[in-house]
Length: 186
Ligand SMILES: Cc1cc2nc3c(=O)[nH]c(=O)nc-3n(C[C@H](O)[C@H](O)[C@H](O)COP(=O)(O)O)c2cc1C
Image (tube, rainbow, N blue to C red; front, side, top):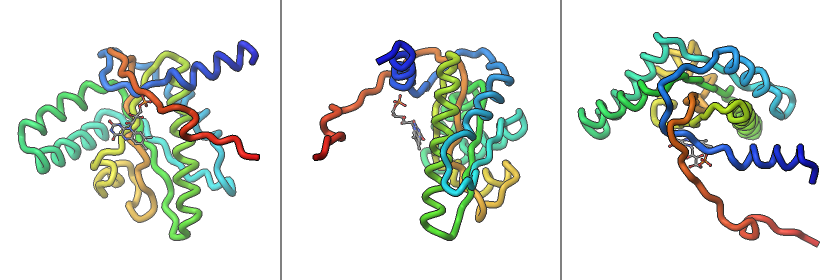
């Protein structure tokens, strides 16, 4: 294994979901670069099924209000207030949407391609020392969220709301033994 390959492997395996962020901004140019490399993900038939949105204050506030509303409905006012505090502490938000297709195979492949793009994006930011969290909570499935992004709910689904920022603390995560998921066949 070359040093370059070893470093690349370490970058892939050292990325962890970041739950809590330092209250400092992330260079918007870096986010732009991450989106540029994200869209080099594989996509069958070159459908380029993705859309990326860097949320400005207004859109972000709309999405947070929607998420808080859902938390209040599900768990009450205190949960809503806690949710707002948590969400407002996230320095930068990207929404990633994927085109919906009536063709089941195309729909699956487009969603898969968009997920690959999200991983590209997260790994690019991780390499730059910036943390991310891929979220797919109930707010991603709200038609109002799609509207806030300027999309039609019957044309796109939100693949994820990606939180971006410098990690305040690292959350550990593990994987089971490789032998449970990998088989060398004859
Ligand atoms: C499609 C997708 C959706 C996710 N949605 C959420 C989410 O809504 N909330 C959450 O806490 N984590 C979410 N995650 C992050 C996973 O929980 C996280 O990747 C997992 O715990 C492994 O941790 P790691 O990323 O640090 O390896 C999501 C990850 C993926 C791939």
